[in-house]
Length: 261
Image (tube, rainbow, N blue to C red; front, side):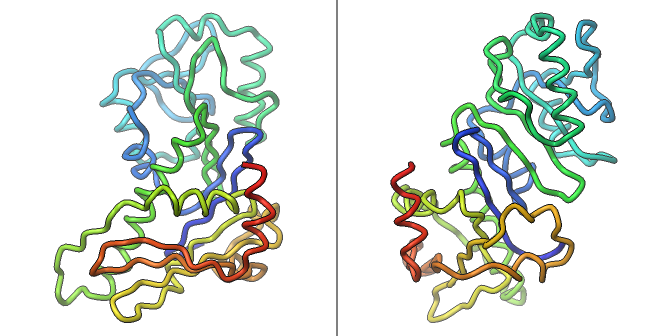
């Protein structure tokens, strides 16, 4: 798929966010700290070491981890962070089997946030370029999304005003707007930057929800993304005032979900 859009579907019960259009750089720039250690569970990528107990490859050191996460590989990236070098030696055979299952099936058997590893993330990329991340603190995702929204808007702006090539400053998305957005993340939300309209120095970004978010793995073309989506709001950025706001068109999805937060 191609197109300047962000897709989000999160499962609050499992602390899982499924996304498209949020890059590894967005993730790295949005998390509080780059992990010191990660373990690779896909058996394809080349780490810097191999843990003797689990036989999983590992990457150690923040710089090495950062380079691995934003670097190109031949296949999906699947990893968990962990704190101490010997944490992996504490994993039971059943827990190692759970990680192998997750790498193969692209979903969890048991929630992959282990007290033994004290991991903050379990990160999977799929062959369809979706990203699945389990967060110990789900609120961490807000900052990652903020980074990604600003990047997509700057990309949109630079493509439209390439002749002038002036710096374009984008302010942070305020917490009250995130509180509104969070209410519909579980519906399968699309930030349609490629359908954005500029009007009187305001960028009007359509916000749509998916009628069938479970079919996301079947998308092949951009048209598939929007085929069963309906518009529920407009995310607005005021270029002069450097201000974000959300204009809700269909209040029902927001009302139905806000009680669950």
